[in-house]
Length: 347
Image 1 (cartoon, helix red, strand yellow):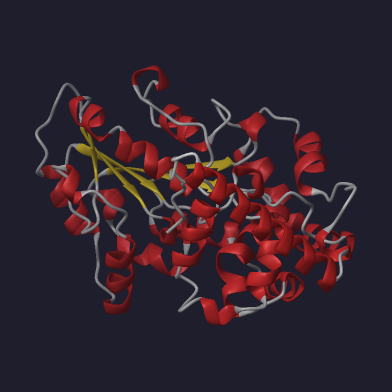
Image 2 (cartoon, rainbow, N blue to C red):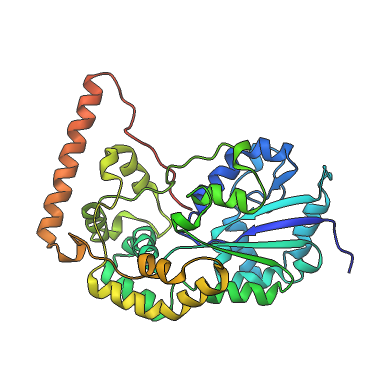
């Protein structure tokens, strides 16, 4: 088969593993990347030529999956349409829903047309599961404890399964697996690490270091989980956006260890073999024992969400609401109506 002179870099997630930071950095540096011969796939899975074309093609990919539509020809044609610069044609596709194993077959044959690099970012399940509960589980009215049990029962997140599936579909692809652990990241944040990994000097690009998806205080998360009717679906982020605009910055973090000791121990045991295999396979040259003990095993905590009563949590939430109202009144009185801090929620 004719091989196009070109390269595609597929950032295939995972969700809740720095995807928003990486995508924001790519979009923010769109013009500079174009000058450097690097193109981005936009919301319609076409090469973005202007800023209007930019966007993460989450829903296009979902519809392609529903129809069973092969995508290798489309992607290789898009890369072939690029004007070659000083080097090969390079395209970047980033979408966190690509991490689902059932997405990989849509790309069958792509590695016979292009040079393919697959990039995955992972985070310890002790962090991923509470973050995923905040993003999806609480909107369904699930308690964190029930969500933990669901993740363990369904082996979610399916890190190894997804990576192995992609490798079987694209055997000629180069696979990079990166852990969202500061001491393992170049630049200590996912966006900087991604740019460095694909050969782009961080010095040439503007890469922000603030987290793209700050959380909310644990008491607010608890109250939200008791009111799932406030969300039209697990993808409804309107209320979260408004809370982020209204709350002072100090309440835009979880502020406590969310998991109980027992939940942490269950998660560690359930994913132990997979995590050790991933670390030993994809992280050569590191002290695996140190990394595992530090980031993949439960740590002691002074306070835990699981040990607090409903009444304690409700009173804390009410106190935050009162303080936020007072802060907002002070801003209005001083003539400053700007919100304390805005954020972009994860897709």
